[in-house]
Image 1: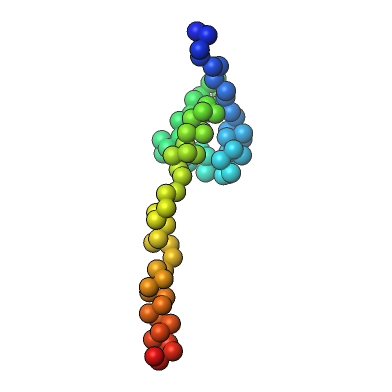
Image 2 (image 1 turned 30 degrees about the vertical axis):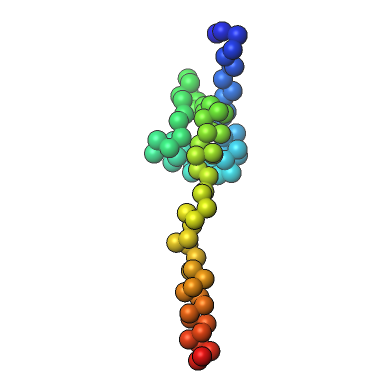
Amino acid sequence: MTGTEQPIQWLSTKQASSRLGVTLRTLYRLIDEGQLPAYKIGRVIRLQAAEVDAFILGARIQPGELEHLYPSESTSDASSTDASGT
């Protein structure tokens, strides 16, 4: 290891699931689907803290990505106008 490299910070699955705010089952699914890298070291599964943090940043929702989850204001304005009879 050279002087510029930082040692890897390993997380247990419990620590990683807590850091992500998900259940262990969800964490295992993310690992199994290839969305989150993990490593089997002996009999345990470990995750690199930097890779968990990168996953978190990559999952960030950008403005406008959730429009499909709520009705647009123009649709609700039209329905309220129709309901009032004007």
